[in-house]
Length: 185
Image (tube, rainbow, N blue to C red):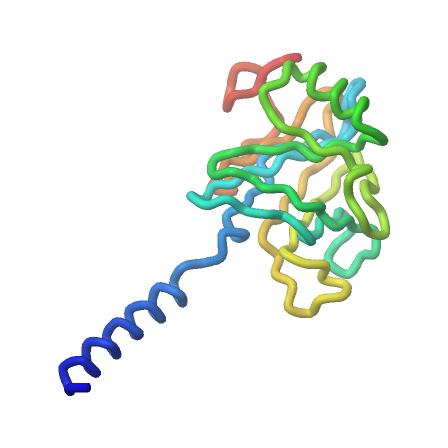
């Protein structure tokens, strides 16, 4: 191998290493974009949006609404979230409840029921008096290398209205029909 070949290989390895160090994991591109903590009829729910250009599989991700040291979180099943896709996690006991939820909200999205999750508390309920949601790439109670990838907090709810966040993480406040894609169902 010549010095030129060795130099070219070292440059190529350095370039790959630089890409690996600067490119964050696709999981870091999941955002919590909407929360309903005081529904009139359909139960509590929250929306996740993949803002990356890659599919993100949420298997063994963990969500919690009692802080990272709480024991009331839930582990995600294998769910692929496509680039640009939003999914909804709803407090639902079975598939029929999820189907009813999607129908009540006029469809056009994918929802997953809490019955599909594992963990100490598959949906502990979001407090209408104010709460928070944390999303981890693993269970922080059992995996010390788990990364917090998204979190939001919100004040007391107005029944029937959601809280919304832009894909950038900016707080949009309480939903208003006709603004930021919000509508009345």
